[in-house]
Amino acid sequence: MAEIVRNFIDGQWTESLSGETFERRNPADTDEMVGVVTKSAKADVDGAMRAARQAFRAWRLFPAPKRGEILFRAGELLAKRKQELGELETREMGKVLPEGLGDVQEAIDTAYYMAGEGRRLSGETIPSELPDKDCKSLRVPLGVCALITPWNFPIAIPAWKLMPALVSGNTVVFKPSSYTSVAASKLVEILEEAGLPKGVLNLIHGRGEDIGEYLATHPETDGVSFTGSTAVGEKLAAKCLGLGKKVSCEMGGKNAIIIMDDAKLDLAVEGAVWGGFGTAGQRCTATSRVVVHRDVYDRFLRLFSGAASRLRLGNGLLEGTDVGPVINPVQMEKVLNYIEIGRKEGARLLIGGKAYREGACARGYFIEPTIFGEVEPEMRIAQEEIFGPVVAVLKAGDLNEAIKIVNGTRYGLVSAIYTQDVNRSAIAERELDTGIVYINASTIGAEIQLPFGGTKKSGLGQKEAGGRGGALDMFTKWKVVYRDYSGKLQKAQIDR
Image (tube, rainbow, N blue to C red; front, side, top):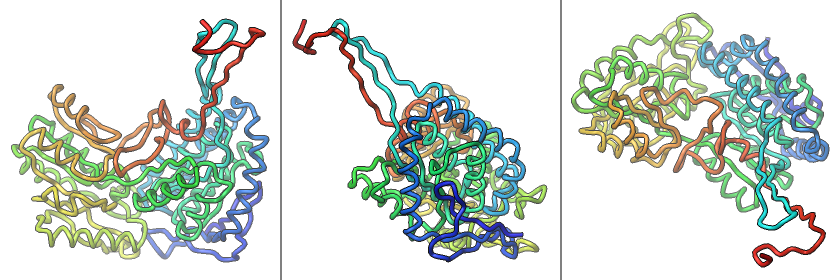
């Protein structure tokens, strides 16, 4: 039976003021209705913002360790419901069940990690140059934060944003992707059950083009954290920065693996298959390009094509399925158009290249794993984000040429290199212009205790997730306090 999904505003689950709804169907089997979702109007955003502003007055003073305890309870509830939530993700978004379970595990890890920050949120105590005076810096919350999340990680990415925002003392208005509203509502239910006071977390559903920009630029919004396309992120950032709002945007990628002539090819092939076709290529970290040393290029292509051709497409809840569907017909058409562009550009289609409509897959949005060889760096399939199961394989004469190819796009999210030479890996680590670099691993696999984000057109503002430079820097601002207990006027830089 389909879920009825409502907004959550000021502690109440409510229908939208518009009275409209939209459907969520399983992208692997469009006969299955997953949810009927309320469609928010701008007036719903206004109500959510009022609730968040009102709740902020008390929540910012709620002790941070106690905020952390609520997140810890949320982590416990997520762990108890992991199987249920993973299966829901598979039905609503299409990723295979092990990946859905991994998505939930990432939210669990984030909840526990950020719960611990409730007892840290550390600043500094610094000696003063004057006697009987002390100096310190401390983190304070921004205020009301608008969080806008994508469909490809419907629980993990919201957790990346929600947990640090909440533990830092902010209140939130959360707008998930309209394609994964059901999973998002379950995450909010868990945080409510964990003990969040009313108004601290508010949830509104709807399309980004209808309410996303209105939410981000709302007069009550103090900070905006967005994950999505580069085009939308840059537009939002420009508007929000012009209004004096703090902004973080995690955007697109055109990620690449370098495979050197001394690489363990079997391992490199596994990494390329996982990076290129995991989540049907629908990750900002997906391996969209593989840059291979000319001495092993032909052998790699044979191994890579063979491994990819053995992948099994289907419903992600069925055991043995390797690759699920893309999210919707619009995305399917976009990916198929890029495959046609690759053909016209003169790249050599090695495997795949078309929609897959065999058996039960005829009722879903499936595309065969697709590999292009003889790709040139300037081709569109080597420059533009496709966000589907399509990998372009390029040839390089040496490490310097490979690094030049990898860096030669407008994106800079993730790169990787397979080599057994420690000197080569050190050079790649230094020269690759991406926010994340993997050595002898695929472009997929970021861990939540380190910041996540890219360079160039892949990211703007603070990074996501944990660690120094991560999400806590997005959701807090610094306050410096000088306390003089000398009982007299002292003048810094003058009194000696």
